[in-house]
Image (cartoon, rainbow, N blue to C red; front, side, top):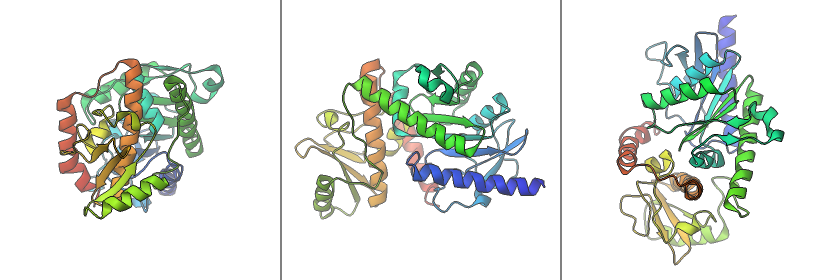
Length: 333
């Protein structure tokens, strides 16, 4: 019976990850998903593995007590597994947890405070405020301690992580997907109201406007790198300035700063063409870079309202180096 339960939970979590992928709430390997087995353990998606084609057997069994893999050689759990463990310890009724880097929820973390929830949304999120867990370096003890304190002070079903993303706490996979979608709708509307203009959002990571297609095609003749072009409305105001990391994945994937001179970054701004040029090892990788660029631009726009500064230069550089030497290589496996 226990074996059947574990097999079923493995299938449920893989299906949930792929449902989030189809809904555009996660891309590439970003984010992670878990499901409770019992009081002492849960299953979580492995670190650095793409959700397309993920198999149930690849999920890692983890202890609720410390977020570490129970069996040696069973794969490496997501680096966020300690925070999943905290969620299960704080809330015995929770059966499924998703961590996402969804665009507008991530951008709204740059408000730097809990977000008040209007009355019509409170039954959905289960609280009057969506709490913000303070920023700290990814995978650090400080980050886990901050999440522990945040979970202890709120019963909300969604938690925002400063400069990073969101945690969704649910009793069923259906509720988890619905909550994440509702959170993004809420944050999209709030972003638009705060910025004071109607916004446009790329339908999906593969979508290109006619101008983007034309410019990318001309640029591909000049380089062997993958190319993706952004003429996104929220990026355009930054083309004559330097865009620094306001979200940690921008530092990792795009670079420690982006301007009209490429340098070591994976993006260069071209004010004359009114576009940002994104580079990668291939076209798919360049589109991943573009997705992070556009999300960070939204975060930067919110930071201009809240007065929050960009991530410290030394932290951005450290994250960039770790990503290049470790995570990006692991993601290829």
